[in-house]
Amino acid sequence: MTHGSGQVRVYKFGGTSVGSAERMRGAARLVAGCPGTPVVVVSAVAGVTDRLEALRTLAEKGNEEGWRGELEAIRALHLEILADLTGEGSDASEAGARIEEQVGEIRTRLERVQDDPGEGSGGPWETVGHQVAALGEDLSTILLETALRQEGVGALRIDAREVVRTDWQNGRGIPRDEETYRRARAALTPLVEAGTVPVLQGYIGATEDGRTTTLGRGGSDFTAAMVGAALGAPEVTIWTDVDGIHTSDPRIVPGARLLPELGFEEAVELAYFGARVIHPAAAKHAAARNVSLRIRNSFAPDREGTLIRADRREGPSVAAIAHRGGVVLIKVRSRPLFMAHGFLARVFEVLSRHHVPVDLVATSHTSTGFTLDREEELDAVVGDLQELAEVTVRRGMATVTVVGSGLLGRPGTTGRIFRVLEDRSVHLISQASDMSVSFLVDEDEAPEAVRRLHEELIEQGGWE
Image 1 (cartoon, rainbow, N blue to C red):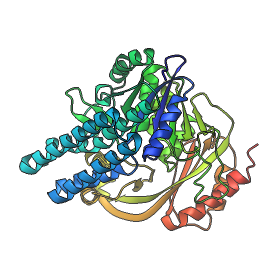
Image 2 (cartoon, rainbow, N blue to C red):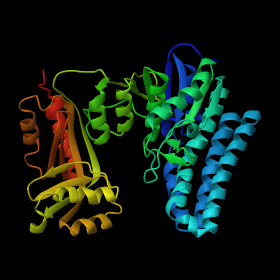
Image 3 (cartoon, rainbow, N blue to C red):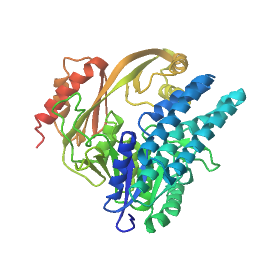
Image 4 (tube, helix red, strand yellow):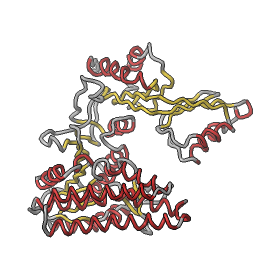
């Protein structure tokens, strides 16, 4: 089967959508049935990225037996999927050799680090670490290319390192858009015009001098959005294991319902504050380039999913209630010496120096509170902050966020929210736009707060 007519459609498959030979075949059939001209972006097989992070940790600690065992298990998993896909034959032989080559290259690089501890710190180790992290996508693209060929689709694997150009900022690549667009068009357009389906890794990029970089968790969505923008695709489909974006987490709120359509600003807020269906950077990027995103379930492809549109505008409404656990609250109270101009600048300079991203912020004349979405490596941050102020750290928090459009313009909105939460301890409140209102509560109280808000603002409605 060949493609080559119709508009370009970017299909991105998440890890669960390619998590076995059966799922690989399902993904290949979706590509074969694409109504336009497909370009495919693939995540690592489900669970493999976590295993690679564990492998890197073992190697960094000098546990040779541990990392070798983990690498062998990853190799065996992919060879097993390949065998289920192909049986014996030329496709199996060719793909198997490429899997062995990719795994062997990582094994060699880790052996060099083991033999030369000097490579185990600073820049060189970061380079090896990103190469290790990229292995999952390197292997999954080999498998999906093979599955596509088994379905009669002319497919060709393209290394995303040759397409996605990034910088090297603290070892995490930030894409250089225009250079990436130019490279994407040069590498992919001739294939598309010839009826060949390009298959490339999500999550992976490279610097100008060829060092492998990664785009962070969920970065495959970002890759798909960039490729869609570069090729002028009207829509990018994110194939995952859920039907789309819901009004809340259905595991917590039985009455949650699917949102057939959503604006980009709402989608970004939801993604950032807990609805992990789409990467917020991908939504922002697609919106800027007027590319729609559609979230669909590869396990139930007959369902339409959720369409995220850049041009969607409507009156005031609440779209969804999101929540995110594992949040840390840090409160800093200025000492008299530092109450002068510049106190906040000093606080945020500390956070910037330690590369700590801040989520919510609330401030008064003498104190500031902010939340972080991680707990690791906070000792050094807190130590530096204590040189400036009295510092309190509180763990076991969760953010609960009401997301919608025109929330500031609708009288009574905040009143309804506060009434719902009047018997709950709220540690921080943040509203910086008319798209969201966020609260910080104890983590064990978050599910009930979400259910109450959903019932009051969505199930009962009252926005007409």
